[in-house]
Image 1 (cartoon, rainbow, N blue to C red):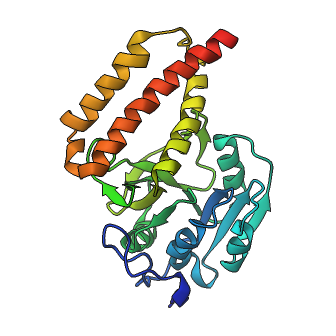
Image 2: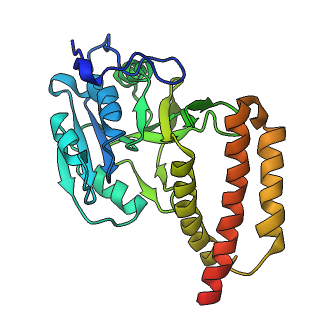
Length: 282
């Protein structure tokens, strides 16, 4: 039975859930855990520690596809026994697909480097796959954290993601900064969640939204929305805030909820303003 090294254990996550726990089950179906990385030394130890129960004793593998990290990302991946590959950045969807193509096990679990598995999710995966005969993929709910708080309202939970598939059953399609996995065939779902700690600081959130709004602007222009629109730049952000904060009860998440939905509405305005700027240049 696998016992994680002491330096990889933390007593609990920010929702009070232990970060890594021993799996009570033996895995009869082999899993490839696949990640793409770039300068993820602050997130990667937690992510890899959470998946070790799935790949312990040669029952699975960890695939890390890096795009030129300059911090300790590569060293951390090697310390955890990952199969390491380095390729130039090709865009989110193509990078993820390239990483999945390197998997050799029966099932492929694709994770972002700032995500970790709840210990109960690791056990649920083992149990589900041991008895699964029909499904080619599984949806996993995701708990999103903002400034250290688990956001439970405003559309941020359960936030299901299709991340576990039979090898070769699906691939990612590009959609700005949010590529989507699609499969052909029936899918199931898990009850336990991924832990997504993407925004520990306001600076990290603003940096992400600045990048995402630029990518979203490109998608908007490709869809013919590159003109200057008061409705999209002013009224759509306002209505987005009202809908998420009031009607979807984002106010239940306290100060963090207020800031998250306020700045998310700003992101919407940035996206359409950048689409106008990009359309004008073209």
